[in-house]
Image 1 (cartoon, one colour):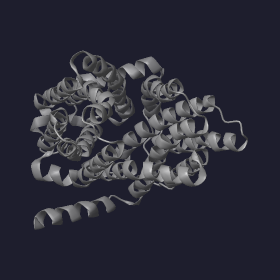
Image 2: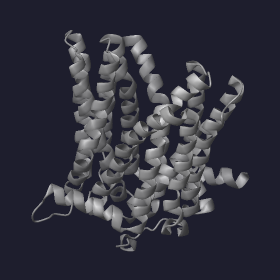
Image 3: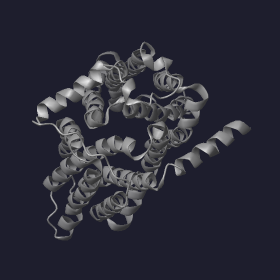
Length: 426
């Protein structure tokens, strides 16, 4: 135990030794993530509390942002590879500040409509994708490749904190100053993030230039690179299959917990909060786990833990207390999520050439977010036919099977991250 605590303290110290420019990106990303999570709560609350939106309008509001991500995602990657990433980060943050400022301004003028919310949902989703793809591609040019795992661990830690703190901050702001005015704080958070990134002083390498830029060909190059390399192909295959079956849970979990298990909304909220706290510890310890057990074992092990945790959900039965115990155990498995995400992102950044990194990032992003809603639809249809419990069990089995992409690939043999671009397989 003493060794583990010592290693953990060393891991935290290493995060602060990544340099002042990394800390500026870290601060900017942290503020940006909190703002994004506040928006995720404040926008629908504005629709419900202020505009009295109907269920159909809420569906359109949710679908507008998702559709924007799917349509724009691949284009974002191509543009990120054409340009320097730091100016894109600043522009995306300032753009989100302007877009979100529409809501409090329209509310103060008494002209806020549901159409304004659709516009904000689309605009903020597009700019968030642009920011996320850019900062993930920017990181390898800011720190040494051997420090990528440490950098991603720090960034994932703040993502986990933002997921816990953001909704709570949004709820307090809505209670104190109304939902539309809470969006003003969201806009201010993005301005702070832009300033933090603007303060970075390390020169960024010039992007590779092509004689005849062609957006379609550039997107195809990113998709092709994700398939040709055996490591990237394993990541893409695992991500695609797992996203499909994870979609089952996104559509069925709340319904199953409340209707079939009889849990109250308040109790379910507490159980989910336990998962958020567990994820925070996973982000904190991810780097130590890789050093202790090796990269491949840690990566594959985290994917297996996610599948096992999912299998506990359909096994829940009996009293409310017994069902809660199963769901809490499943939520404790959220410890593995940031470990998996940090490992996947770090491997992708380590082996992808800089001139392709934006497109590979966006391709992986699209595979997950494009397949997830298809899984949600399939999960609903299967649950209708065989019941929610069996559908959730199928989902858990599917997620476990998706790990075979990693097991039967060079990933399992990796003790450390491959750092040299020359190690990329073609």
